[in-house]
Image 1 (cartoon, rainbow, N blue to C red):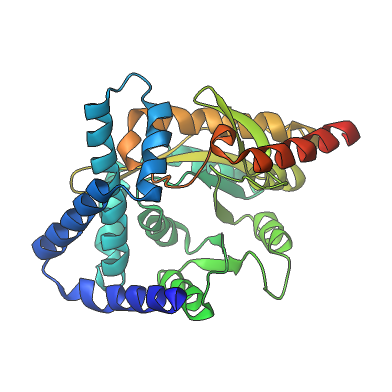
Image 2 (spheres, rainbow, N blue to C red):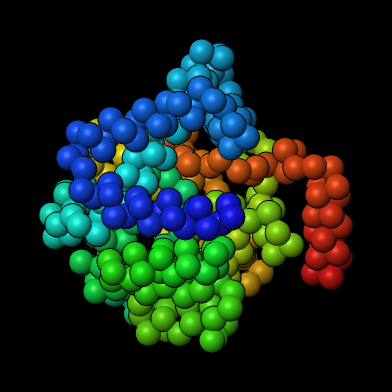
Length: 310
């Protein structure tokens, strides 16, 4: 029942929110965000714990405000996502093009002819960045987790494909997503991967804001095995627009260099998030210290076995 209600809610969002006047939509989503901040459910409490690491000197009142603004930022992401299919995408591209930096890093990577892996955090509005990339290069490829129910998953796929994205399912597809991504890179095409959280056996241990967590190996591993450039990306909002910073490439010294490259991604993300903490939308447990002790022990065993065989 909960999954069905979620699907209906998102369906209503894409149908109704785009019909509202902009001022009404902003007011509605801001009020909803402020209510969620005051209610302080589990996700908001975890966001607060995460922001405490990012801004360690913040007092309780400052943390209250950081949380409120971060929830508003996340609400803005969804408001824009619901309205995006009816927006003038050419105008979106032109607005983004004026505020993006580091485009020369992307152009140089593609000129080298080996494709490019863009590694992104859960910040700002990555769909707007995707619209810019499609308008500039024609398309790009990304990966999507298979949501439940299936109708909700298909709704998200249809939304992003309507914007020109190529979306590969993480599980349940006809082919291994890693194979598809490698093919796109060898064809000198860009791929975009969210890269700031992977608390699974496949994650790479990193230090992030002074504490241990794990991030995906995929971006660095694909760069190592295909020769593609690995470019970390920063994203955040302005009052009436979006900023994307494409950072210089991170060197990956073969598959053995994946851990070091992943740590470098974490360092770049940390600098951007520290500068724009309220646009980081991390409502989940991220640091290992926040996990239940049983989960921590299981991950430590996995890492110990990996190091023992590596």
